[in-house]
Figure 1 (tube, rainbow, N blue to C red):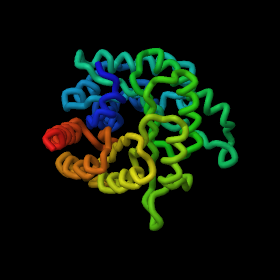
Figure 2: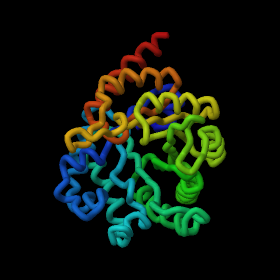
Figure 3: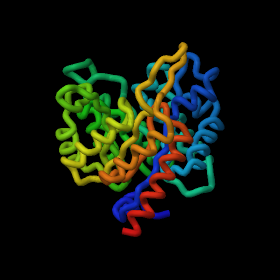
Length: 303
């Protein structure tokens, strides 16, 4: 299979999968009481395989692992830090076993759940070592890509990048920040502007940067435009299916597959290289995005 970065350099637009959490709640709700989503990798790996297979069938080129909260610091909240290696290794295996089709396995690395000093009580070394332990097993188990995502603290994201690069100098690294819309523009929760994040991440040696979570597709188009002003690195965008709403006691994500797919035309026009979905997106959303990417790709080739 051709290297993912080679395909991006040749102008291909790749499709990533959608939400893991919402499908886990549908399929494994009874198994998640009092524990974390990552525990399903060990107790019911067949559910993870089924979800991965649904996204592969929908047309995803890239499948993320169920390891967002798989660092030992995060797993310690559930007294599972001693299972770090088993949980992360099982997540890679589940995706590998989901289909015989060639896809890229993207290891998801989420925030540690700790605040770095001086804002919190955690030393950078502790967070670095936690990321290193998780990422080492993911790389050794066969991850094709490392995706450091939903990051709001640029310093924490940088520690995860450093850990990754000390494990492998060649594995593709994506860093995806989460921004909030304000009257002065988009900022992370820690107050970092898109311009600052773009420049610092580019200097850190990552391969792809972008944004996920916290916003629906329309804001993510604006965020992608802002990123493109400040970096020439490939971009990855994974929008929520809108901002969740509570309707008759049920959490609903309002953006339909058709709406999100139509707005993806804006991402393609900006030159986004990887398009996927975050909270609330389903295989139906990814299938609709795949159709738009294929249609626009054919038009781009003709021109």
